[in-house]
Length: 269
Length: 303
Image (cartoon, rainbow over the protein chains, first blue to last red):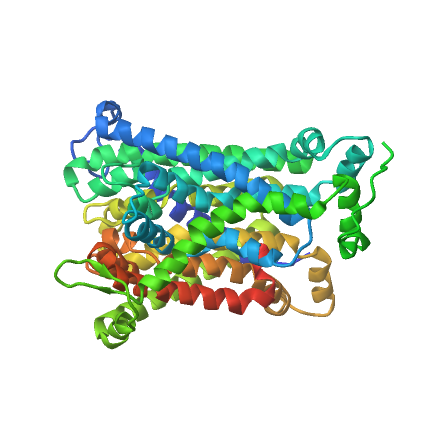
């Protein structure tokens, strides 16, 4: 074992506690502030109320933005689930030239800063497709989100496939199942939880994405983070911002928590 | 079923490998065809949508803009790059951005190491799982939400100043230190998770061996643990570095007047797309070089 003096252990514990406080305090502050009754949220909170939650739920722009965010995230997740699983199966079950390059290509959209992906797609939409008469509109936003969501599904499914016993698939084939039947009855049930976990992560990633959305959302279309961005400099919107931020935190974190649970339960079996 | 079909002889090298045998049995015929089938759609998407867009962006960087109509004029000129390399303000901003990205990466690594050691070697298994979840979740709280949270925390009448006021101190306020702090806050989990995972994977008997050979805690850390953590740290640093490099939102909301490379790109996207494209080449090049440099360290497997 790694021997650490008690004092060192305490020091490490102190660092861990400080880091966790640093990570959670700002988020908890925003969540607490969403229940702050004051007109312009001041610190410390003097009285709590649900007033701003009610106001937010009655604001059309926020309801519309929530709807746009949900549709975008669901669309991007659906595309990512199909594409991500296909690449994962190709890379995990086959050996071929250029495998590492494809792996890198899938990672690239999240490894490059969002602004590069955003500006590149914006350039294609506005300076290439528009002049030849193609308006991508709302679909362009979903396409952009799907592109960086693929890696989430890919990572999860590939990790699971690498631990699955390929002999099961062989056995299925020996027993007369065609490739599609084998996929439906053996391979897919084997990675079903990883598929779901990857989909949840993709949904969360898309739901709280901002930078790519700035450059690819068509005029007049606001996702929830875009609504936040457009109102962040306005002090009189501060209280509604707290509510919207809390919604984004919860809608993004809950799927991730579920996804982690899914992965852990499946791995311990 | 007895396979009466001839095995795929068109690709003998495939059949001699174990993976090929598996496939031959699994897929009955034409494994290559199935591979192409699986790859076609994803590759068409990633190349057709993404790579082509990146390539077009690079091409646009060599075009010009009509200063009066803001219309993009195709052609070939190095003027945009010349412009960047000869404008001191651009160079200063680029240098500042790279400096900030490096500082954020160092801060993340310096915090991730003790946290990782605590989680892997001190905490009980239950605490360990709890902490692992606790450092994963904020990764997903949203970029903008976290910037907003920092903006409120560091504001003039925000909680940081409120906490420090009784001691006669005040927080950093908005400015360059706030940008570094916010970016560290944003990207820390990208470093903490791989470092923790790598620490967990070090076999415990390596620590026994180091102790048996007389190495103290610090020596073990320096000569055994750190080298084994390198791939994880490099993988984590790719994100902390690259994501800091492209930021402009943190600078906008907690940076007061601080400009980053992303600020310049954002300002020029509509006014002068070729210049914005040329500026985007800087982070692409930096990340490309970084990826190329770490290709052989095995760090890519950790991503």
